[in-house]
Length: 184
Image 1 (cartoon, rainbow, N blue to C red):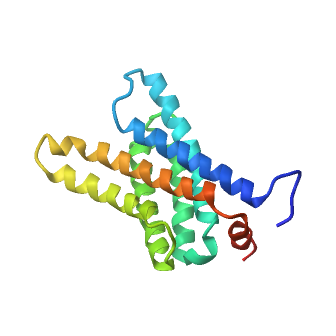
Image 2: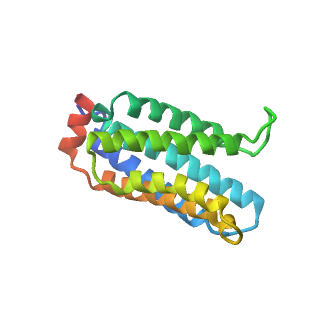
């Protein structure tokens, strides 16, 4: 792919990797109670959502030719879910847009993970973390207290860890692979 004023696909992938890594680290930290200031938390989650949005774009596009229709559909749903959960926690539709969007995002990442495994993509850690986040939320929720209270904490930490590893891989990926992925 040709350069456009110094912008190359390799640089864009690295920027998306940095966004995924940063958003994942922030999501990992946000899984634990860092502040009780509601305004600060809204800004933190907004930053996380924006970073994960750019991160998921790079994560998907760097391997799009190999992920097939399931990968594409999962990517579209993930982008829509991240767009849906961003912003204040208002309930303009009579339900929690954050809760429904987060659930939809988790399902989309499981779909992307299935496509990832089916294509034999590496590393395996990101999809394993995304699968584990859904399993942790479900299993810990049915256990008695105090474990039932830790499901969302564990899910958030695992979800963020998946983006950290995927982002790290994008930052270190070779420009030749990136160019081939875009030109396929």
